[in-house]
Image (cartoon, rainbow, N blue to C red; front, side):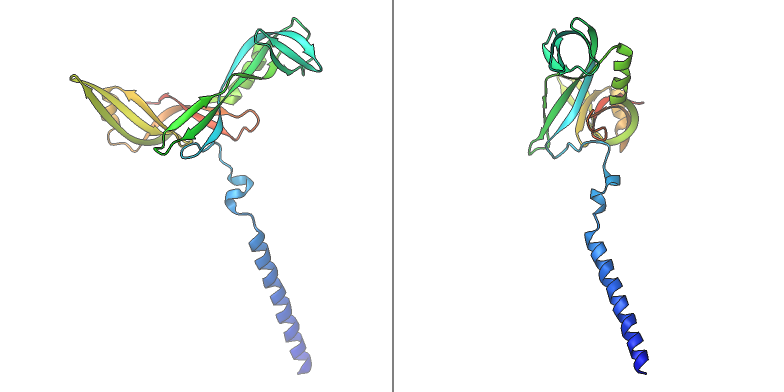
Length: 215
């Protein structure tokens, strides 16, 4: 009888240890919204302030002075790392980057401030530069939320507009013809062409820019 009580006590003790350990693990578990798998593909802009990638372009430049592992790009006298050991006088192709700082006011309107063009990488050929550019600026077709359509009148002439919400949260107002106004009136979503501009240092961050209607 005494041995039986001892065994019961041991079993209860082990169960209590397991329960305490399970509670400890649950309390220390990272919330799903902070887990690596939950990171989104686009920067949230609407209703918040932040910096987002805005645009890229490829330009040709000439190498000027060489300075401690860097080089000066002419004619704009921009300094960048000389990773490929270019010499003074070489012609290079330069991938440049523009960033946008977006601030949302109390009425939900975005104030966009664009940075200067900044060189971020150099290439020996335009083909190499264009390949990187194509990966950073991607055109896609997708459905977006249609907030609504409306028309205005001035001196007997009508103008028609559609307001859509981009995947990144910002709202876009576009003039449309009367035929599209009529076809959009009863729709909740519409197909659009977007340009996704990705951040070169964090590809998962991107800015969706409206490029046209897909129908």
